[in-house]
Image (cartoon, rainbow, N blue to C red; front, side, top):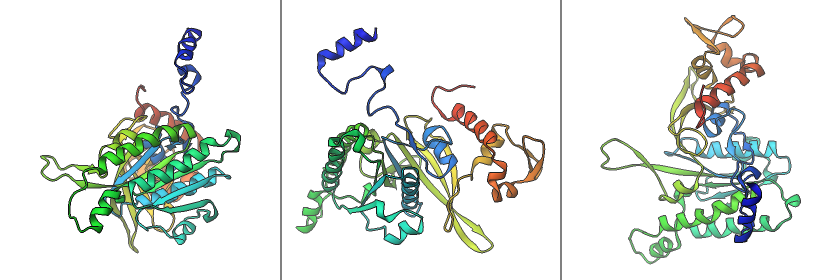
Length: 340
């Protein structure tokens, strides 16, 4: 049968066509980028050992100050740690990042390029030039590349720029079309070059909706192109010393690998950054790996500890065996087509 299919494909002269059993070039997930949080990895990929797909477009969307840029820089830092010869291309539309923001989070500034862009057309042209150049390189010479656009919602269009310069106060009706066209072209090329792209985007309240809902900025183009879209909302993490960070609830707005509308809560500390283990205890209790006994947590070996003890020394309690059990349950719970 495979021989028959290959003969049919040979007739259309499309070098990118393939038999599914051989893998779909540019479409099959080529590994993952660790986000630095086990529960966020699970929400994105269905595994605590996964994360952002390594050849797809992913998006973090939310209201201002929900941690989108902080997440993006943190994930970039993890990418560079995991890929010693990798580089990051950071498209900045807000003039929001500084050298100190990268270095303070342990990101190697020698391997990050920040490119200011103002319009969708400018971003499209420069991103495509970089991707096309990488595609022209022999595969053995290519270095791992991670692209970030922060943020899509702030990009203008040439028409909008021209109208503003001429004093015209009219709405640009071409912006959604330009955005859709940009990602229609980029999606295929990024997949073929095995380049992950992370976008941040704004959300806005839909006026007049019967049920309060939020919508993504930038039109529908991103909804079609992105493999993952997470929406973020936050609450303050307060201690006796004051506000020390945020609890950020992440919801699957769209996901091609994990069930939509799944939620996890992450913890972002102003000093230590994104907590790797936060959120696992609730899942361990949900799946019966840990048990809630009055004010304490019963562990698999029968011992009982306070949840604060687990939070203070997570590596002690989340052994490889416990993590593997959690991951097996998460895959059954989070992924499409999985069952117990």
